[in-house]
Length: 168
Image (cartoon, rainbow, N blue to C red; front, side, top):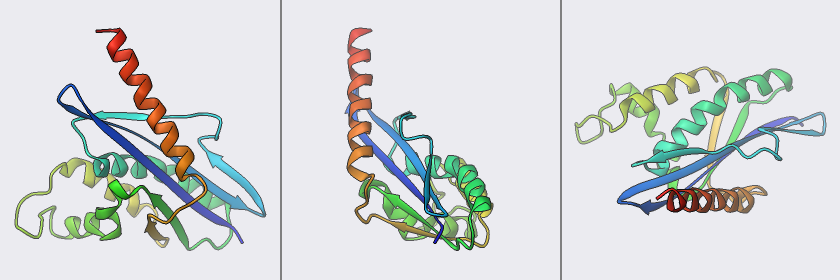
């Protein structure tokens, strides 16, 4: 059976009074018993944010991955659900369905205040709507990529810190 999965992992540290977040994603497509990934597993592609949160980083990464997911869905047979694996620090708004609820309420929270980072959530929702007809199942369940991707993200943070320290 064909399937399409998305793995999104972020990690961060407080550095120079700013929260530094790095994250990356991997889209996996299993088609006719063959495994395809984007980006290829041998190519680490990281995004970097300062003064951010894991949730904001994850929303950006999911929106960025949507085009790849759409491509793979066009290459598969009868995929109705895309599993989206998230690290626990970023999962809460997605598992609770908040982005679509915010959109329905014109990006106002349950407390009547405007959602922080509205532009980012609007971009996220615009991309998610392109996946119309596909169920997105958000989960923090353990998976085969979790420890590898988190370890890669930690190494990227260390590399950034070393470069920052070296450049003063």
